[in-house]
Amino acid sequence: MTTSLRALAIVATGLIATPLAAQDAAAPAGPPSGEDTVFDDTWLSVGIGGIYTPSYDGSDDYTFSVIPIVQGRLGPVGIDPRPAGLALDFLPDAENGVDISAGVAARIRRNRASDIKDPVVEQYGELDTAIEVGPTLGVSFPGVLHQYDSLSFNADLLFDVAGAHGGMTVSPSVTYFTPLSRAAIVSLTLSANYANDDYADYYYTVPAAPDIDPADRLPTFQADGGFDKAGVNLLFGYDLDGNALNGGLALIGLAGYSRLLGDAKDTPFTSIRGSADQWMVAAGVGYTF
Image 1 (cartoon, rainbow, N blue to C red):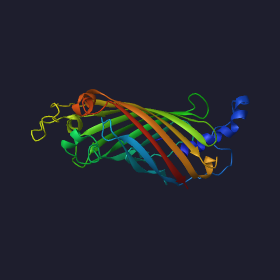
Image 2: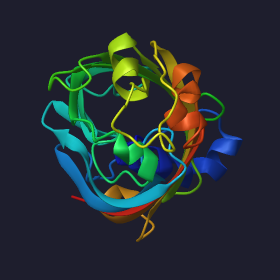
Image 3: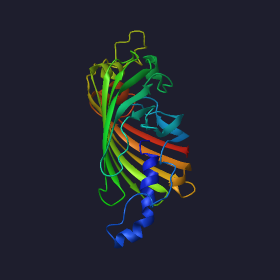
């Protein structure tokens, strides 16, 4: 869930002035003049959510898991969530205009590391947990279609430092964000994932498996790197007291679809035992202070 609750608060507050702005093009964006907000200095959002996702990348069996949600700004450092991880932004937020973010991102990847639902894929064994770390860079443009929306571009370059797949991924994304009211927001994110040969070999290659019953044995397959996934996510957020500026409780819902590409789609783990179509739903509650 990558849309900032800080953006929710500041951008949605500007909707108070929308009727006036329709008559006066010079009406300022952002919070009403002089109004204090929970986001003026250090702030933190913490929460918990549930997510329903495929058992592994390429599976057609689904599992439910509980995930933590952490986001905020501690002094000069911004904290943004990532799938199974987070990113630290070391650049201060822009007061107006284009905002640039740069820092480091990290995530834990447990693809086929546990809870494999498919009995055939399970016989090929569980994989090690990868810990991926690397730089992240982003840029956000406000006021794209109207005074309060934004269009953001981001890319994470991550390397496995735990010696699992030992490879590298690049994950570019573009997000359109717009408020619906003082409290409600939606965002639409398009994303992709590029993986190098080491990553693809670890997750998508099917080795010879003489110990597996011939009736269950999959065809051998050698995977190479490339773009292995592209998808779209739709996020909705709502502040429960109707005023995002004062923090407190908020609800978040997320639905997504992704399509596996290249060897991630062609591997027998996907093409025979699973599906290239991957769906995801999630919901959570957070508290901002």
